[in-house]
Length: 393
Image (cartoon, helix red, strand yellow):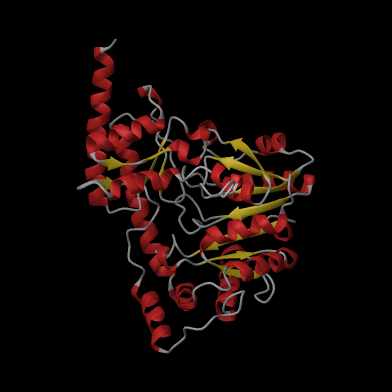
């Protein structure tokens, strides 16, 4: 059969994260620091609520938008955290993870040829989702000298008459970078000036280590032009429950709900009941997990200093993004050799955009014991490379 496949689908690159994860799954005794999945179990009281919902026979479809009880709790949460009010009836949609919200959010607002601004390095889904929505991805390269933050000048320089929406991926995967209030105020000024939309992916909002997370929806005039995306995977260790949400203007959420209705119907009912419990009684769990991540973060930064491996200090998410440019290898070559020689998997920075070249993403969503073992192997590998370089001088 000729032309059996979509050229658009065929043209998409597979995820660079999954490539290394798949390799590790087939290796004996390999250590993976590659996947952004908490090593904690979902807190018991949250699991118990999911179990109870099954015992009570709550295995029906919910409304397309999700349980009203959950949408109300999300509104309560955002009001408590950001001081911003949403209408649970018309401005909240429960999705199958944050990833679905990204996909249908872009499809709901862009027309063919519209430009989507994507700061990189960043999460692997943004660019392909923009392409599949018929938009033109425009990459803004974030710089280490700016702590991988998006600056107002970088944003201004990237905007054209075709720009429709900016994706704001902070706290950032893979760099761990954050945006502080003053940064967001400057970005918001440019957004208002050019009258464009924002998709703010805040899935790591609960995992910040310098100061409380600030959302762009808190800035003047930004709530009405922002699709706010969040979920339960990272903060509550609920990755497999596949539950996220989007909040935003009614006009946009109506179209997102329509797309969700035809593609998904509704998010998993059991997960929604568990999420209600997470929002009502999960703050202490989040604090405890965040403290553990911060301990691991400090350990890694100290270990990099000891091995003299350059790495800017991240203040969000659970990733570090060390620089390996001194070794004269591409990120993929370094990661492949490290995996082959030491049986430790990390992700090449280029999995998150071409400007990630020269960096690695290392996740610290793993136990401290595993991190110590893996970083010990990294120290040995780095020292071996440096000794080899000396011999060739």
